[in-house]
Every structure is written in C-alpha cells, then in structure tokens.
Image (cartoon, rainbow, N blue to C red; front, side, top):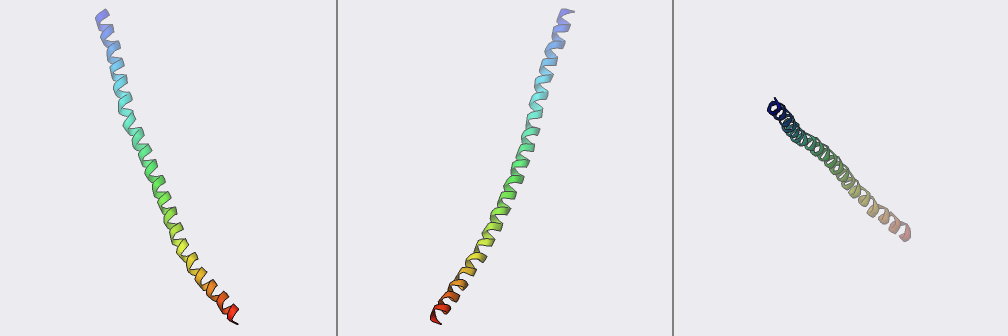
Length: 73
C-alpha cells in the first residue's frame, strides 16, 4: 500500500510539472501576439508621421517664396 501511495504522489508531481510546462508556450504566444500588435500600431504611427512631414515641408518653400515676393514689392 505504501508503494502505491508513493507512486500516486509521484505521478501527481509529474503531471503537475508537465501541465505547468504546457501552459508556458500559450502564455508566451499571447505575449508575442500582443507585442506584434503593439509593433504594428507603432509602425502605423511612424508611417503617419512620415507622411505628415513631407506635407509640412512642402508648405515651407511656398511660404518662403511668398516672403521673397513681399521683399521684392
């Protein structure tokens, strides 16, 4: 009876350790998905900022040309 009890307890520890290892990849997969989502969001924001900069810089030469015209007049 003691051997049976020892075998049951040992199997519980083994199953518990196996279950804990199985849960780790799922958690890291969820973290990886969240990281990927955050990276996509950051890339979108960078892209949006990059598109906004050329429009702002395009307005500057027009403004400086207007200033030059005012100085000539």
